[in-house]
Length: 297
Image (cartoon, rainbow, N blue to C red):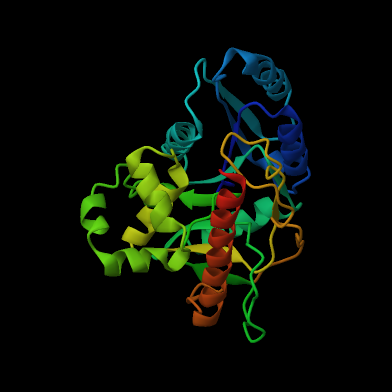
């Protein structure tokens, strides 16, 4: 029997969000059988030291898992560097991992779902990541499965395998050739109209995102992200409290569903569901542009 995938949890300066995330994980049926790695980033400014210390006091007392390993950075690395370094470290010691940030609520069977998906799809070279989250898309009435494949990786309650994470190109070495290839840029944007703009901003240093580079690595390897039709994750961080800008919204993961999920090993992409997925991110991208113009952000 395979060992349960370890949980990698990243936190910064939101003790209240973190406590909700951990309590939610502790209620999972596999929590006591799962190793937990906690990465606490250092304060960016002196005024954040108090909140960071509060976070560290809390994580020092976390129980309910098979083992808890804590990493406390003395300086601020930022989320991108923290995730790349932390996940890489854990995956150098385990074949797979489940990753969360400090603003995720989960169903009690989230870990069971993730471990099953990581087991079933480990050998699929065209699946680079799995997630317990799904955006509020309009699922076609004739879609028969509990899971679907999408040309995008999720950064909310996700997991991957060491041999696939090793294929990530964090420098995006072929960016210049991609920049001049309209057809390939359009193909990349099949996962959402916001993907190419985000990748361009990342390469220009306007934003610092590990997730867009991970999604691009998935695209470059002709792979998909695996999503459930019904979420087992809810994001509670879209209240403006995060370090990365988010619009305040109540739309992220309002519905969470307990219960078994059928996982066909030969699951294929579905054109109708992919179109619904693309439409959601197209509208979301347009809304962000509208709000930036309206609020000057």
